[in-house]
Length: 356
Ligand SMILES: *Cc1c(COP(=O)(O)O)cnc(C)c1O
Image 1 (cartoon, rainbow, N blue to C red):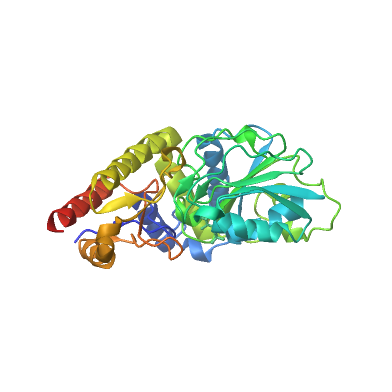
Image 2 (cartoon, rainbow, N blue to C red):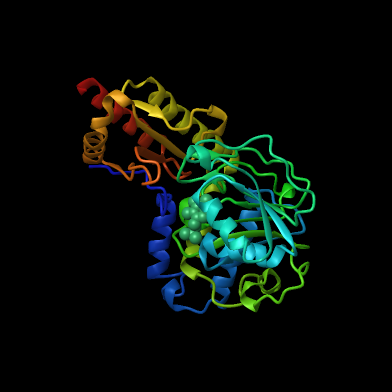
């Protein structure tokens, strides 16, 4: 039976990526060796790193004066590294979920943190609006897509102070006006590559503005100067990222991704609204994530939650159990998820409705 992969992360990747990684693990670029067993300084791998950086740049139309880095450590490491490099005295954060909260916790180690607004009062089921960003903050940090709760900031906001974004789970899902940010980072395992590589888009003038001593490995300057080759980069995930970037390029670029993602999420939200068994957890349509669609049973059908999950899983719908802090269901519709999988899920929801 065909499996439809709705996992939130690590998550579905294009078949193109998986097939090319398999090939490179066997025989990389005609070297007769596996990509896992050759030097990261070989000309073959150096070319991979350079191509991945330049294609990332091209797809997101990243302006001059920004660097693209591929580092280890995951987004969670950037929760610490960003304030270490950017916060002299004070920073501002928008608290839209568990990941944002973790970023706030780390920032507090380096200075004063003003949480400008939080949606924690309603279990992060909306994006706060009408908040004021303090002009004396060294930067303002947002999480553009809240993977666990299914909310998303889908536009590039204006900020009076340098803007920093965790884009772990919506990078390359839409065009981004990179010039509005000084730093964008994320783990690759939601929409780009297997876990192990972290993308960082950093403006040239970001490093060097704080007084504290920064360990070499955590200083953005180090990685900018060495082109992400200061130490051994996560070679295999970087290779996989390059394959995904090529796939995105060949499938309409980020505009093409946005169009497809919108089509997928609209269909699913429509079905959740229509189906008598279900309701969405995010009521404000503007705040709904295009990447992670969350829903629960309507009260009168609450006892069918587990049976529906089992039924759907039995029909090949994998990874639709909601995060434990939200309950219900979550379907992640990352770039690589085909429209066909969303249609299959909707089919299963309708079948189950007709039995209930
Ligand atoms: C998954 C996720 C993270 C954590 O990423 P790691 O690479 O595991 O550290 C951080 N932020 C967001 C928005 C995420 O979805």
